[in-house]
Length: 366
Image (cartoon, rainbow, N blue to C red; front, top):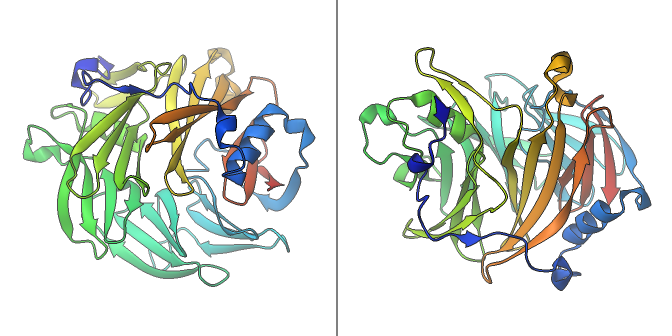
């Protein structure tokens, strides 16, 4: 069986706004220094000085379950999802400190899925049914508390009063229209569920797989929650007060992937080739949304033992202003078989470059 079935995707027949990058990014030049850095680096990467960091991460495709963040211009925080470690790196002294590591005790983290920085608080969504908070008002960040949940979070967003948590719907209750996001208080009390999920019936593994490919974020400029699923080409905007769907966007060049689902085995196989996915979403400033679209192409099955380099990766960045509904294509880069496997991560203070072959890191300052 091939999934997703287009007819089961939420609101597929809605009149979507195209996120086509039709506006010139130079209209925004100078307003957001980190975006200017990304734009210029993608055009001429050889013109920038790359500073090696004294830190080596793993080389698994799952090292960065969430993108790194900077607390200020000197403090870089990285979440190593492969090792379940939270690391703070001083960009001046080049000292790395492990803030949290794999474990089940106070201050430990297990199976981290997402990380957001709101003011001086760092929140980590953990698949072992916790949200951990770290206080970053001091250096290094310190563990503050772990909020216990009764479900497995995949992604989180935060307003002044609530968390919006993306999770797998509880389809055991035979809900006719399962929801994908749970709104809870900052103390963990349930408030409401919203966001229609893929209609998979009792095939839980399908919804589980799709929820792991998604993100929820909060757009402060429009007071809306934004949801995407990496397997679909749509963005869903929900009013943060009424939780009603307000508008949807479509990425015209992102077609549906073909996952193979084996019902008898309850197993789902991710496509290896001709696969386009929304990889990440982050808020820039107060309201702009940056999206990274990754295309997986030219898979070479004969070289399966070196999984990370058996296909070509094409990364493209789009920017959306939800207020004006304008979208911009910032640029992109390629990671081709047989070439250096570098991956970019944008932060408020600079650009992090991760080498997928040896785990090394480099930094490009603003």
